[in-house]
Image 1 (tube, rainbow, N blue to C red):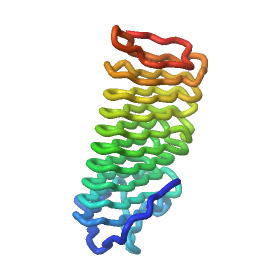
Image 2: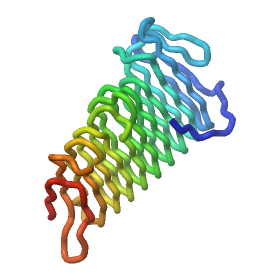
Image 3: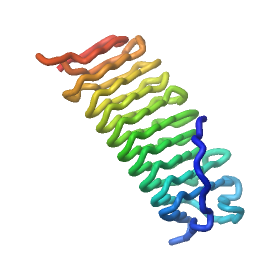
Length: 237
């Protein structure tokens, strides 16, 4: 995993609240926060800045403004889930169990690992979203901006929308559903029987990977035709 080196951060600006039993909220501020949360599924607890919090079911984190580094991890999946909002700024966020990550505004880097039905939303900005491990039925939406979305290291199929902007998308080696959406996109299905849609009124490129069952929905009109290869079936429209 690549993690960009970031400048020094304030830890004292991170606060924790428990609005009701089982639910914890972690809030950053407008500075560059560093938030490391380690979940212990056997004790049903998590630690932050050396302090432990018990009886957890759901953790919600708001990075707020600033270029935040937010890392939320667990040794294995459990009944605990997390929802992370980066807020404004160029954030780096990783989640290694069930939940969702929202980059929000800024050029964000999102890393999602081993998340059952995990979700990743880039938000506005030129985002990098990377899926690896056992993300089962993961859903990704790049949002606005020129995004790079890579699920080539994921062990299960994925559902990916590039969102508005000129996106580059790599599926997994399984039966993916990939959508370029608005903009001039490049989409690679890789292995598996993929369904790829680049029929968006803009010129796009797509490669299915050459597997049986690969299907593409593409543009073809008097002005241009999308570039497609490696598909068993292509539907132009």
